Picture (cartoon, rainbow, N blue to C red):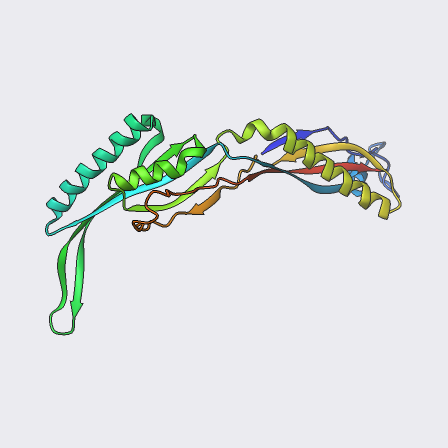
Amino acid sequence: MKTWMKPVGSLVIAGSLLAGGTLLGGVFDTATPAYAESDIQKNVVNVVGSGEISVKPDIAYLSIGIVTEANTAKEAQSANATKVAALTKLLKETWGISDKDIQTDQFYVQPNYTYSDKEGQKIKGYSAGHTLNVAYRDLTKVGQLLDAASAAGANRIDNIRFSAEHPEKYQEQVIQKAMADANSKASAITKAANRQLGIVLSISQSDISTPVYMQNYKMETASAADSAAGSSVEPGEINVRTTLSVMYEMK
């Protein structure tokens, strides 16, 4: 939270003799100087201004995983590790994705169960899973990348998240919009109250927010007729926004 504050003085009531003050030793007792509730607090208007702009995303976050089943936990884990190693090599060497943009999100080895009234619950093999979070910046080739990952053995691609990698570069634009919105609201309120809008006394800003646009990706086995079509992924637009809490003097 960022805050800009203009100092506001309090109204000081000067000390005065108490009504019917008592004489003690030739000196009148005086009231201790007191601070009344500031008049300034009765003459302010507080509003929240919102600013938002639509921008094209510049990064995609992909969840790409491989799940392998086998009779034993060791077999499942070993086979899955081989597939993930091949997928990781493809991402780095063929698609030029750096180490910092590939991160393990989930890893597990677990039993698979069957159940019947006669035998109850029994273990029927094991599953090993390994999911990678991949950051990719060439949004025109996201569909091709997912197709290549699928061909390399990826069988768990849940969704694609589009975002702005550096939303702070849009902060001046959204702040200007938020301040204009705050000014408009404050002006309308003071006009309705038959007052005039004064100077800005304080401003508090929320963080720059970049909602993520999420697109589901459903893996399907293509038919022979359309196997060459490939996946089409459209990044669309995302909104960058902020809010300002503004206190104005009201004349």
